[in-house]
Amino acid sequence: MNLVITPYDPDNLPKEEEIPLPDPRFYNAIGGDEGFKKVISIFYDRIVESDISFFFPQEEEEIEKIKRHNGKYFAEISGGPKRYSEEIGHIDQIEMHKPFSINEKHRDEWLGTWREVLQEFAKDVEPELVESYFNYLVEYSKLLINRPRNARAFEDLAKV
Image (cartoon, rainbow, N blue to C red):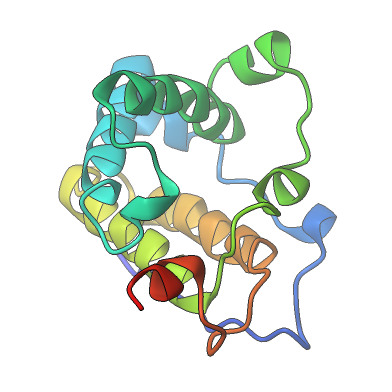
């Protein structure tokens, strides 16, 4: 399985509508609803312990809400049920992430956590299906960066 985090290049960003969605077979290959919930749960359990934990609530009840909410989104884009669209509707993901100061370092940490979880829990899934999911995350995450790498982020200022 070849899960590569390609560099962020602000002068060569992908167009949102041109980023291919993950192969829709990924959802079933990862174990359908139960398998996807497990992967999402493990991902968020790790992300709240990561260097970007400050982006996420630390209360168990709140992180469980995020797992359910975001799990619906990630499952849907991967060939799962359309629960996110039916219950929540269309949400502009780029606009939704604008209040957060996201730089390349944050993106790399987020993707690195995804890569770790996928390598561990999707090792029995056809590599090209896992790669299609990860490649979507890699490309789409480039559109969420809204702060230069060398800019002092909130968490850095809080340490001063």
